[in-house]
Image (cartoon, rainbow, N blue to C red; front, side):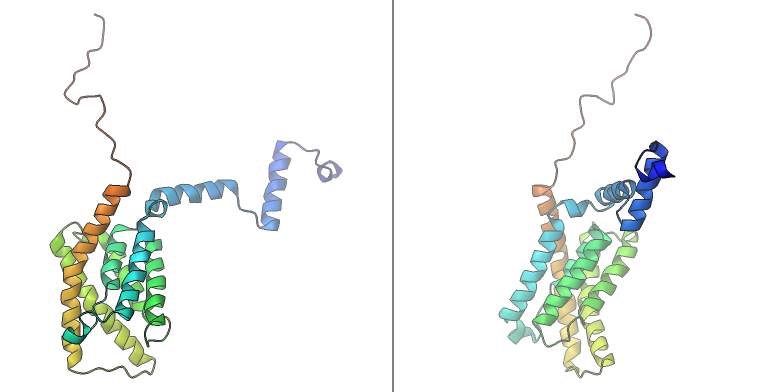
Length: 229
């Protein structure tokens, strides 16, 4: 025991003492840190690219333009929203971490520039993202028709869930027969803009993403003879 106190111990004792110190002072295990880094590099490749940054920047610009510019609101009676279309793309093409980031930052940005209570838009966006992300393997996400259908459903579902959440919290939003028209307009808008969002991010991945590896010098139709000449 006295030898351990002064650091004169073998390799096994040193590893044991290091483990004790890590547990005592809360230092992370290097092997565990390496495993988490490998998981992030393998399962969350978007964190190493500009895709999530572009998504958040586009969401912030969309929310800002909705608040600063009336656009088609005087004609259609409702302001088009780009966040549901962005959430459809994020849930189907990226990792779950990006779904939480877009729901939190996009929802808070929307609530901070509107009369909604802070955080009320985050829950519908998060619910939409979780449902689509858990079923993304069953969706034809590369087909424009499927993207348009999901965009229409998302464009109508997010405002409906937001209104239901406001009613459950005791607020009195303006709901009437005109809300059906507004929901139809948002559904058509979502169906039209969601395939464009997929094409936009596909172009960004093509421009800034890594180039695909070439076929190499080996030809699949080449025959290799083995043995003596």
